[in-house]
Picture (tube, helix red, strand yellow):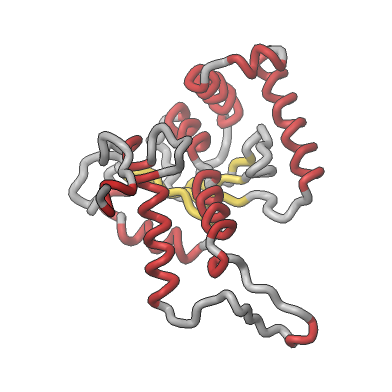
Length: 224
């Protein structure tokens, strides 16, 4: 679906060596032409909430110090202005960095503390400004948020639980053992997320990508 486009693509993935190699092989001509970039992201996934809060507070403090702003000034900055300021700081930090070396994101977030970015398509002709932008965009926050939403709202999608008496085996009476049923249910959830949204959703992902002019409502599917 995307191979015929002349747009640039940036694939951000979890730290799975096989997955990044697959994408690099599948898009080898586009990578060579500079149209596709691939990065893997790792971060502290298993820290307790207090640890995440502490790192987040440190990240905000470091960002305020680097930008020479008060907490109120930082919070009042429009997102696009903040991104530009962060980009300039990242450009400074990338100076002298060796090619294809992992980059430790300097500003902890609560969702991705201690984030490390490995840009697989790093190359000499890539400008520092472009590299800084890719580093800023290299996040799994939206994907992890979607997965959490599915696991929280669809019982069968939650992680299996193992007890000592089960000797490592997992089973739950809410799980479905017909493979086609979870696929159907998850597909319905995916459509609802991308095209319909909740009552509070102003712009669905499909609208943001320009695939839809407005939300799809239940009445559009089932009639009045």
